[in-house]
Length: 165
Image (cartoon, rainbow, N blue to C red; front, side, top):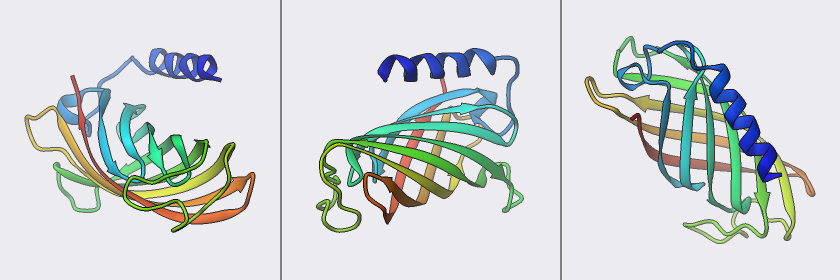
C-alpha cells in the first residue's frame, strides 16, 4: 500500500512539472507544512494548474490514526484579491487503526472500531498568500462521510501553514 502511494505521488509530481502558477506563493508549484485541528499533522500541496491543486495530508484524527487524505481543490477569487482566495473540492480519506483526535475523544463525532476506514470528504476553505513571501496560511472545513466499514458522518476543520521552497 505504501509503495503504491509513493509511486502515485512521484508520477503526479513528474507529470505536472511543466509550468509555474500564479496563485501559489512566488509562483512555486510545491509546498509542504503543518496543520492543526482535524487532522493534526503534515500537509503537501501540488499545484496542477493556475486555479487547481492537489493536497495530501497525514496526521492524527478521530477517523483513524494515522489518517491519510487527498483533496482536489478549485481556487476562486471571490474577494477580488491577489492575497486571499477561497477554495473547495472533493477528497478521499483513509483511516488506519482506532481514531483518537488531538483535541477530543473519538466518541465525539464518528466512532468506528479498529481496522481501516474509507471515507469521502467535501472541503471548503480560504488561503492567504502574503506578497513576496514563500508562505501560505489556510483554514478549511470539511464534511466527512465514512463509507466503510461503517457508515457515518462528521465535520473536521484545520488551520495550517505551508512553505514553498
